[in-house]
Amino acid sequence: MSPGTLSLLLSALLLGACAEEHGPAVSVTDVRILAPMPGSSAGVAYFKVENRGDAEITITAIDSPQFEDVQMHETTIEDGVSRMRQIESVHVGASSSTDFVPGGKHLMLMQPSTNVLPGSLVELEFHYDSGLLIVNATMQSRLPTQ
Image (cartoon, rainbow, N blue to C red; front, side, top):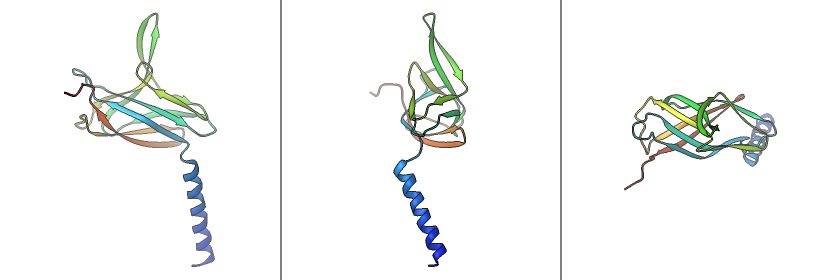
């Protein structure tokens, strides 16, 4: 093995070890994708976005090959009335996290492009600043099992 090849190999191993030790700066965990309620065509997704980096990130879009339209929404209470509105982006501060939960931020999964049923694997593509994170989760039924 030539000295140049050995040097390149050692550099790659060191970079790989550093990336593995620290892990990716952005992660999505606790993903719950729920099928549409009876009579509705929109599913919903909840999860936690964690930013372990030392700079704020901005999620600018979330896509899915299984849905024609994926929108970030936020539910707020105004004058005692619950209102849901679409939001264009979500900021996640450095070394912090943001939860997408019932009654708060969440995803609306609309216009399925395939036959997506409970038990189907759904891919979510998180676009942030100059990055892309792809997460897969199984769609769950909202109906109680018998």
